[in-house]
Structure formats: C-alpha cells, structure tokens
Length: 142
Length: 142
Length: 142
Length: 142
Image (tube, rainbow over all chains, first blue to last red; front, side, top):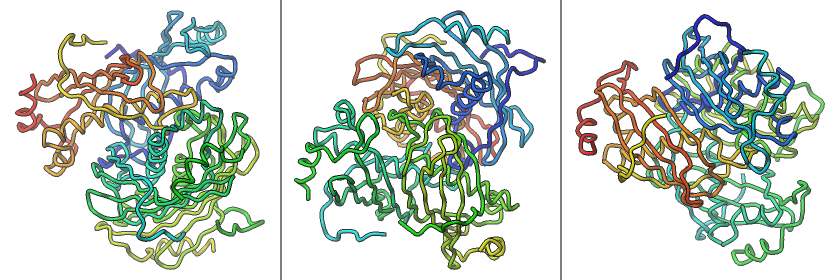
C-alpha cells in the first residue's frame, strides 16, 4: 500500500481501550471503528500540541478527510488496549497525510497500518491552503 | 414502565433492516442501536408528513431528546427486518413524547417498547414552546 | 424517573473523553452514545473488581440489558471530559440494576442521570439467577 | 488510487438513506460511516444472490476485511439518498476485492469511490481458499 518508515520512533502515540459496543458478531472490533481510533489519535495529537480541533473550528477552518487506506493484519478484541502510533506526515501545502500503525498491546502484535489524507476548508467548505500556524507546528516533526 | 395503548392501530410504522455493524460479540444488535432506530422512525414520520427535520432546522428550531425509557424484551439479530410502530403521542405544549413498539418481523415477536420525550429549542438552544405548525400536525392524530 | 440517592459517595467513577465521531449535526454528543458511556463504565467497574466481562463470558454467562431509563439534562460537547458515577445498585436475585449520574467535568454540570437493568443468561440465552460470585462482590457495596 | 472501470454498468446497486445519528458536528455524514454503507451493500448483494452472510457463517466460513481504500470527493448530508454501486470484482483464489462508487442521488454527484478486500476464514479464524460456491457465483459477473 505504501512504504512504512522503518526503525523510527513514532511522532505521537496514543492508547485506547476497545469497547464492547465496538465489537461485531464475529467477536472482533468492527473494521469501521479503526477509523474512529485514528481520528481520536489525531484529536489527541493536536490537543497535546495546544491546538485542539475545536480551536481550529473556532478560528474558522475545518479539517476534512479526503482519503483513507487501511490494511487489517490482525484483529482487535473487546477489552484490548491498543496503541495508535503516528509514524510520519506528508504535506504539500494543500493536502496533509498521516501514516499510522495500530498496535495491539494486549496481544503484542501489529494489528493494522493506515494512511489518512486531509484538506483544510473554510466555513463555506472551500478548500484552503494549510494554515501557516499548522505548518509551523508540523515542520518541527519533519 | 408506562401503560401501552391496547388494540389501537399505530399512528405510523417504519421498516428497518438491521446491519452487520450493529451487532456485538453476543451476536445480537447492540442495545444502543435501538435508539437510532427510534430516531430514524421519527425522521421518516415527519418526512412523510411533509415536515422533515432539516426543514425544522432550516426554520430555526431543533428537536432535543430529554428522556428515553426502553424495555428490551426479545433480541434483534443481524439481517432481521424490524418494524417500528409509533403507537401514540403525548404533548403538553412544552414536552412532546412518543410511544413505540419495536416488532421483529423476521422472527414474529415484539422485541421492545419505548417512550422518548423531546423539547424544541431555538438556535440559541433555549427551550421554546412547541411550534404551532407542529401542534397542528400532531392534533390530527390525537 | 426514580429517586436518586442524595449525598452519598458514588460506588464507582469513570472518566471518558467524548469523541468527534460521537457528535451529530446539532453539535452535541448524540443521545445514543450515552448508553455506550454507561456500558463502558460498567465494563471498567467489573474490571476494577477483578471480574471483567470477558471472564464472565468465558465462564459461560452473559449480561443482557433489559431496560434503560435516561434523562438528558444538559448537553455534552466534543472534547468534554465526563465522569460517569455509579451511584447505587439494586438486585433481587434475577434482575440487577445500576443508577448513574453523568457529570460533565469540562463544563461543571450534571449532564444526565440513568438507570439500567440487566439479567444474566447462560450460553443458550436462558435467564439464570445472578451468579453467586457476582452477588458476593455486589454485597460489599450495598 | 486505482483505475476505475469506465462506462460499464454496475454489477449491483443499492440505495441507502443517511441517518441523523451518522452526522457529525461539521454537519456531514462522518467518514467512518461510509464503510458501514459499503458493508451493507455487500450484504444486500449476497442476499440478492440467495447466499446471505448468515448462511455463510452457518456453513462455517467468515468473510474478513483485509484492506480498504476510499476517496472522499463530495460530502453526504443528513437525509440524502445514496446509491452504492458495486462496479467490479477481483479475485485470486484467496483474496477477494470489490470496487465501488458511492453516488449521492439527492444532490446528483459522485460522492466517493472505494475498494475493499477480503479473505475467507474458517471458524478457527484460519484463512481458507475462497469457497467454490462463492467462486461459482462470482464467475457469472466477471
């Protein structure tokens, strides 16, 4: 799907505990929930940086998902503790992408990896360039 | 929980097919999803009456849930077709309540019954009296 | 809805952070998600007691929700930290009920209160008496 | 992302109405819900063919999602009617992929396109070759 960076510390890691309501009748966490975990991790990341999503929305811009690629390697079960690692970013002024691993800490294996891409929009839902304050923050990690 | 009206035709009936993602590891539809079914039924009801929710929101008022009571009698399974019946209303000018049955048509039994109560608010989230246009519509059923 | 115990410390408290995906277009946490928060709190409670849900299921019994009553007083927003308090239990050998407050810590108000009732079933989905090991644990709090 | 087949009738089309609970505070259908729509479409597809998912599970094999790629082009709103088209399949004996368009019928535009890949497992969650009865059915469309 894409080349994962090897042997590099994650930019950010976030722990989540899976919920009963997130399971399906196969006994596993439903595959759509992984997207929620990725989003929660992005949320926590920007909050840690002092620039939470609601602050972005207050300042009049919105982050919209434009594409997702995710590979499910090994399952997550109810009650498992997972760690979502943001491994890397990519940005071209308009599009902003994250690369992740989802690691199952309870069972000690890599569960899945993913890439999500995003654009910023204004209140009228027009795509805008990535705001400079966002760029400043991101640069520190690249 | 409350007295259900007996031997009376439902005011409105709506069919829904359960989804795989709505199951949990017990193999049943997760209990929180029933609230989504009730909401979808209210949505369809007002749409049928020519007064869909988004029109309400366009006109500047919002419907907020203030309480829910639900009794789960028999389960729903993946792929089942259910029928949500709105049995009755109750209104006192400020609070508006619906009474429902959720009937499992695939397995031919009553699955659950429920009552939901609501208030209307304006854009500033202040509770307002039930709009007269809503009252007019509802009166026809009482 | 029911008499809440006054001036008594909660039996158990659990903190949850609301998620973006849990909001709806009104800008609030969707009312169905509160049921997920209550369940997550029960889950954490039994885990704290050394008797997690999956252990129950491994031992061959399941906890099924039979009814829910919930009053929504004030909203939850994206990014809020909430605290779910289990205030009290009720048990009659067959049915087991919890009473809760959902407190919005970010905005410092009581958001909602709820009661959920449950029965235990065996693998064949037959209702059984509350297992003695569960009763032993619960007695300590009553 | 991948080459979409042009000018070819879809293999299967399925209509879904978006739900209020599926919106988020941006006023759009949350991006994770699209995966639920795709799954519901696969479900309906196999049901139409007389080989519903629960029958597969009864016969002892399970369909597991191994990867998803989705491009979000234009949004879905509450109340919109969407049409999910299965455009094509790909199968290599082990892995099975679907290609989709999600078309917003209410607003008359292509909302997104996606590819999902799957493997079959037995009850012990071991990957098995695609069952011959599945292959027989799929061949008719290729």
